[in-house]
Image 1 (tube, rainbow, N blue to C red):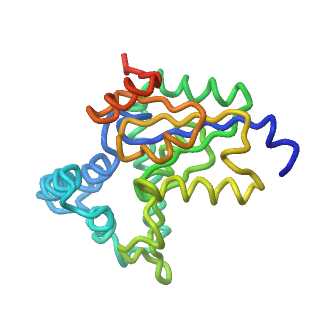
Image 2: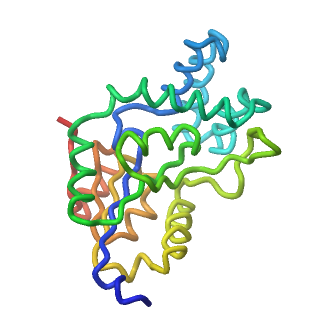
Length: 225
């Protein structure tokens, strides 16, 4: 184990309803609708899938397909251009308080990353908005120069989030359990595996199940003012 690991501190942040008070996938859907890329009913279709997902009746792979499949066949250069425009559109919606939270960890010299189930195409613009270079997101399968609509490997969701983070750290010759201190900020009970693996879990505007877990375990609860 490298000596630096003893002094290393890590701060991880979920994206949707944690760093931002909305669903990034819905924001992306509305962005594309405004540009005529998606049909007029795309928002209601996406919302319907989200409701099934929250109810536990829809697999995350299907939700990912709904978000990405309409873009299949488009070149990555076009998608990256749209992602840049999306970033500019989202900038005014990033809460200053959450920017400040991330900045405090960065100013303290902590290694920071956004960890989200959102596909990388949607998540990376928010990484830039928060000044976080490392974004661990659900990887989309790329075939040639276009997205396929499927997930490449495992989604960055639930227990797989911990796996993705562990691989990301291993590439830096680090292990989560060997770090001096680690934080993970999240709103969702789905993130319980990663919340339970860090030294300092923080519930941010948590859902009912995570709130109950946080109160029982004595975890801090951060409410968005």
